[in-house]
Image 1 (spheres, rainbow, N blue to C red):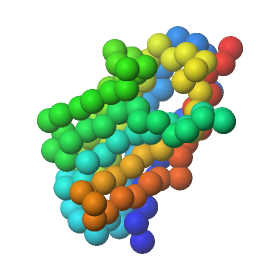
Image 2: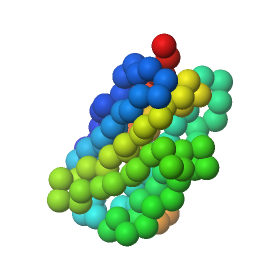
Image 3: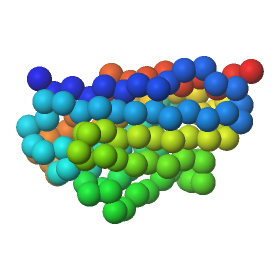
Image 4: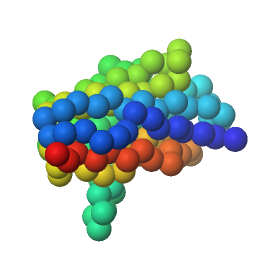
Length: 119
């Protein structure tokens, strides 16, 4: 059974930091073959890409809204991908999802973790 399990969400004050983590298991291919990404979905809004990292971790890209405030990283040996976020704003409040993609063949989502930025 394929599982992507996110953790690390919670309530944080504006300007604060959070580190989200996603652990993969049961994937049909080696974890290091998947492009991993983080998405988020705020209430009433469409799901949007936050950050993406290549299969071997040598390339990263970020949504404009998160550039300079977040870092995506992965540990293929541990089968994890992390999203370090700082200087969080109320508009960052959303459910954050981890996604694993291998071409058009495999596409998996985690169940999400809630991030709430509020004073």
